[in-house]
Amino acid sequence: MKSVNLIVTGGIAASKSKEIYELLSKKYKVNIILSDNASKFVNFEQIKTISKIFEQDFYNNHSYGDHIKLAFEADLNVVYPASYNFIGQIANGLASNICSLVFAVSKSPLILFPSMNFNMYSNPILRENKNKLLKLSNIVWIEPKMGKMASGHIGIGRALEPKEVSDIVDKHFLEFKKFNDKKILINVGRARSWIDKVRYITNASSGLMGISLRNNAKPHFKDVKTIFGDTDYIVNLDENNIYAQTNDEMLEEMKKQYIDSDIVICSAALNDFEVLNKVDKKIEKRSIENEQLKIDLKHSVDVLKELGKEKDKQYLVGFSLANDFDFDKAWIKLEEKNLDMLIVNLVSAINAKESEIKIIIKRNKKVVQFDFDNKNNLAHMILKTIHDEI
Image 1 (spheres, rainbow, N blue to C red):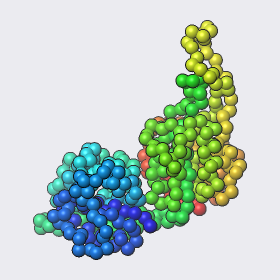
Image 2: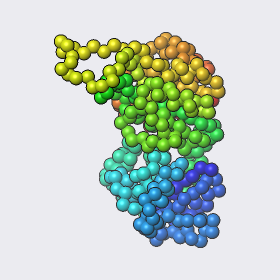
Image 3: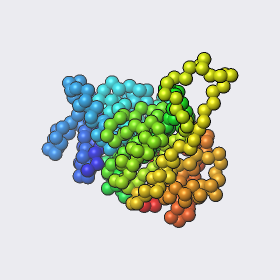
Image 4: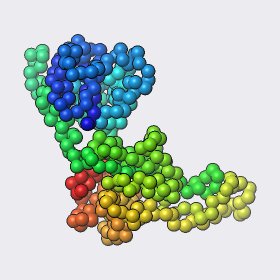
């Protein structure tokens, strides 16, 4: 069963959050997280099916692990209503209460349902905070409705009704319903080829696309495994996130997970070439003759090609970094590596937060294009394209 954190902040619309809980709890495991001000507008204790309500006292009196666990375990965070204060807190990096702490820790998608007086909603500071949040990879902002406010005024800022909220949550989970019983394996980041004990060859890939794919996949798949090389982002090492430093290590770790995986996405920017003869100590500067150090290179193991040779049930997706969109080369690569799908992006995508991609699909010889966009949105569209093909 999918897990949802229902985060309720202070505002008149908080009174509708009980009905939202009742609708969501029929289909999902729901944790209720209340701000101090929310408790002035709603009382959940009358609902007998609720086993625990998480409030500020829980944050104050429990160990670090207890309230951090809340953030890590949920597949989705829903904030209803998202107040002016709460939006300001999370947009500016504050984690001073249990509600904002969940946002600061969680990597799961967060759907914000803002509700406030129309003058507050049109305030330039709120618009600035909204723009900050929409640059993040896991935020969905649902516009409030135009309507009559508690004050009697007419304007934008009215909260959505509970059934509308429930439908949006259902849509979030059902968009990728074919993934629910499947396992996905993703490789991420860049590899090293050691020159000597302290120096190595690598590339400028940040790992952002692979991490965006993982974050988008996490709420929808039965199991998500990541094999990661070096990245510019923190990846917590655990049984689902395994570090591989070189091409050979990446292949070894991928093979361990490959047989049980239904979908495999190879987004890592691995080395095409590696050092032929690694020096097993630091090369001393004084030892270099004529101030020239020559390094012989050889082809690295092609991880994607090796996985293609062993492909059985897996839907295998590869990435190709190219100087231009040369479809003749792309089709050759797709066939040679026994891929189901190849995603082509340009060298300008390296270490960038935005990119454009073209997706080549083997089954129907189809090419799908996604124009310049941030990598989180592209990751979502890649998964949607895979979902429609399997």
